[in-house]
Image 1 (tube, rainbow, N blue to C red):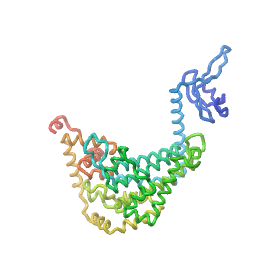
Image 2 (cartoon, rainbow, N blue to C red):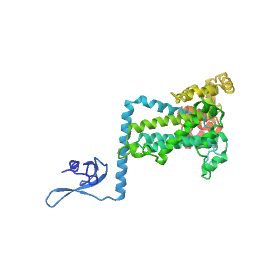
Image 3 (cartoon, helix red, strand yellow):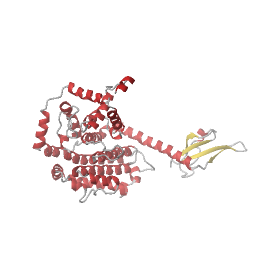
Length: 427
């Protein structure tokens, strides 16, 4: 009898409840089988006895072989979870709209980060802490989505709490402009303040806009409640915060109930954090015709264009936060006057914008300038946010960053041409 035909003919030696399903051959007489009930993978051999009959034997395996099988089983498990999630999405796409709006709105905040080049290339620490903490928080949010999509719901909730902590700490550092504090935290010699009690949440309420919003929405207490809820998954408090309850089976797999619970918490967490970001960067809700007014020479981190602001507003869908934010921020006479002044500026003609690109391309003839741009392009921070709008905003901070981002744009538009050997020698 062939190995494939032996599938389902024997009972699992571990649980005695499932039959062995053929996975793949190892050699002509050996194959891997998996129990249909407990999922255990064993290697079995078919050996022919002196009487000419075939018998099946369990083969003891070395650790490397066990590891290989574990990886193979994990891949199948993850593929199964992702496939089940895809089926759910096709049937209930409307259920994903709040999550997609929240994530898209959060991504727009990348355009308000101030980027500063390092004083010395060998330094690993960015000069402006908000840059590091925002990107790190964004990666935790990405990790949370990935975990949830693959059925690791408890880990998804844990990453969501980490996202919250990093975003809060980043705003705390931005508010204090205390670079020394950040350096101590970054090096591991100084702890961040606690989140609750007299910690980060209460400290951020010193922001005048956030304080007003909190009085009308109870923002701080709602955030504290959500933080404590997410902390349950860190400390495994109760069955609802356990893997067994979230999986409700032997291993990570798609669980509609747990997935919907994660979406609800993810949307609320992003909205709560976005309230704090908008209050610290209030121009997020006061759009201007950014590119038409400034081209490649506008103030970094100050304004968003009309389309970007609409995306930010959409993340607060069906939430009372947006109305209160509008009342508080749009009611600020000083901000309104500044916004009106920008909108009254004449639009830049296309020729002026092109001249900026031409000046940059000309600057690449300087070898030192060219190397500086190449170093910037190799920096992973620039690879994280490849959109053209992101590049437009980033390039305005300093000539170093401006040139790096213009290089990305020029490369996209095929404006850079390879120099001939003669031209390179002249440069």
